[in-house]
Image 1 (cartoon, helix red, strand yellow):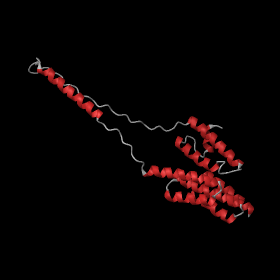
Image 2 (cartoon, helix red, strand yellow):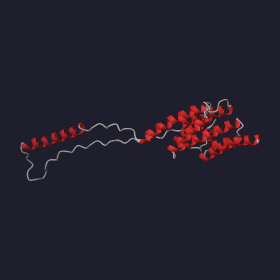
Image 3 (cartoon, one colour):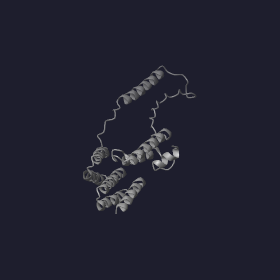
Image 4 (cartoon, one colour):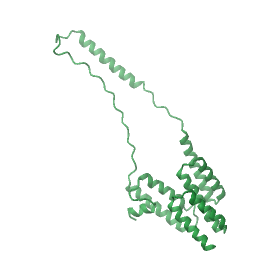
Length: 227
């Protein structure tokens, strides 16, 4: 498997970024995972191929690096240069003592400033973090429902999460996949009209998912053969 095949298998163009590779793999892995497609050899082979392509791309595509901000060290002021060319070049005994006092004061102030800086306080989790935790806990529950073939509960859970996070693309993908999996199960149960409804819902929920579109088209072909 060469580099181009890996990109095509993940539905990406050559040169896709590290984050795009991770996102595409996670989406496709959810769709073809053996736990979601028990007994489906084609889905299992597809999942294995996706994983191999993903691992290979991770070895050749560097992750995005976040630039690190560096602090500039404070500058310490110089002591004034002696007056050359002034009225007199002779220094009185008090002049060195006065200059030394100023330097000591400056150093003391700098040290005090450095030692009195307060350590950063830990901020409480914001709303976005809470939503992300809820999202992934719900995803784990969704996977369990699908694995146990509790499809009505899985659909209800996916729709509730989509209503809470309507702009989240991943949640839409999960919802569409749940529709498609249930539609396929309904075909096997010979509930053809109901199966067609949920397959259409899958396409409407995530219309730009090419891999899902291909799977649903195959399901529609199977429906036509039965009719």
